[in-house]
Length: 196
Image 1 (cartoon, rainbow, N blue to C red):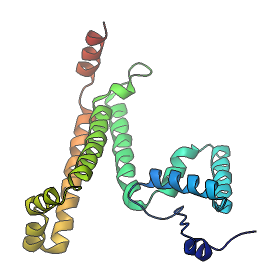
Image 2: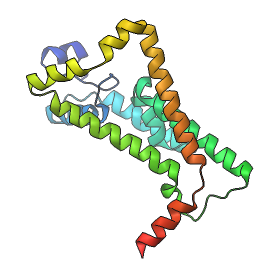
Image 3: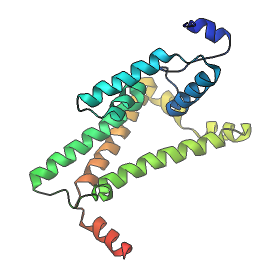
Image 4: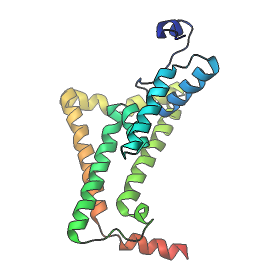
């Protein structure tokens, strides 16, 4: 027997599958654990996702990549798509230049991949750092006073502030492209010298 979502919400059980949250993986795992332990997991969504993943695998599409696009909100997946597009452009232009991909298993050591990994790791670490800094109220107020957001919004308006963000994102994307297009010999040579 299926229990309506409103009835579950009244009991304090909130299923977050398909909703937008700041920590989607943690929310998904918490939802699954709570649902299984309470015996009120909405299996319709779980089974639909499992069959969708099976169909994608049968069509030759990697289910994990597809599932990330299905589950995560567009605000999260758009930067992932942009990174993939930059990677595709780098590979295309390198093939035109006649460069080969190098030895198998070494593509993780390419400058573009290392730079992109550093961006992801740096963003994650700063997110964790700011989460901890926002716990004490005094530090939170100090960060609020140091923030340039109010000044920039006041000077440029909301639209200008958003355009500035897009410009910074484009500059970062261009830097990633340039890094990916640079020659790879130095990185691989440095790695080989440190390995032995």
